[in-house]
Length: 372
Image 1 (cartoon, rainbow, N blue to C red):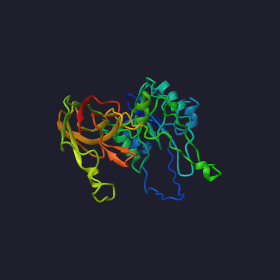
Image 2 (image 1 turned 135 degrees about the vertical axis):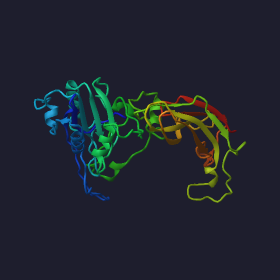
Image 3 (image 1 turned 180 degrees about the vertical axis):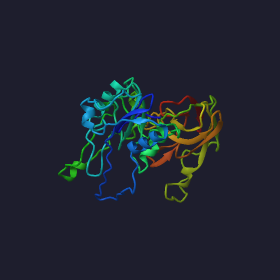
Image 4 (image 1 turned 60 degrees about the vertical axis):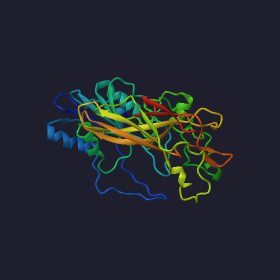
């Protein structure tokens, strides 16, 4: 599983007694874009109640966020064995976010619940990256990043909470320790008055998300590509790197007719990287094997080149104890940089550092390869 928040809480004791705070908003806007109204939405609270009926559990809940923020739990007795806290970040077209934390006193709510419940699970619905000041609370034992919910949001979350489904999602962004780690503010454009107010310079260049954290050597809370499971996976220590074409030219043949996507030779596969991944746990599950590439260190590499870039990934489902070979192919485009002088993609000379693992900061298997 993976740590995240939304606005509602549920708790269970030895008899499956549960406390819940729910403030999930299903609101839809139609402003210069399409929108969809769900025919039937199964809320987390409804799904938890339905599951509790099957097991004889007792569910207690608080659906008023002000009560939770005020630290008023007088309606909850006895103290539950487990609490689910749902927090939410609200955003829509024409309604920008204004802060990094989840909304509606989310940090206060989580900490208030965790004071009373030593097994607090936080589930978040979010339109983007959140900071999680409460993540170090020792009573917060798990976090699920549920992101933007669909009509079966409640059933899908319950399937994970009760262990019916083994989660395998990976973060598509980096969650920082502090909002200052990203070095840019949240920009609210809902009240701009002139056309120039929308101007963005993109001075970060290629240093987006994990590339920024790598370039500044900033330790994230949860890195790009991170995600947990109810089982464990390991990679074989040996990484095989096979060159598919010997001595490739520095650039694609300029005489070839350019097609959509560029010169067709850019998509010629030059390297095959292979390793083995094994499920070392007791239950079946899936993981995503990720390949990151560091370009050679030489004078031709332009300034502003990232420390490493994601260049391949594959999701693999494995039974308990099963091991499988994974192959990742790299094209000329994957291995090239853009030369602003010649206006073409160029293969650099020197050794590429190939790193394989389970996230941008968990790369235990490495190898070197030289093309030119």
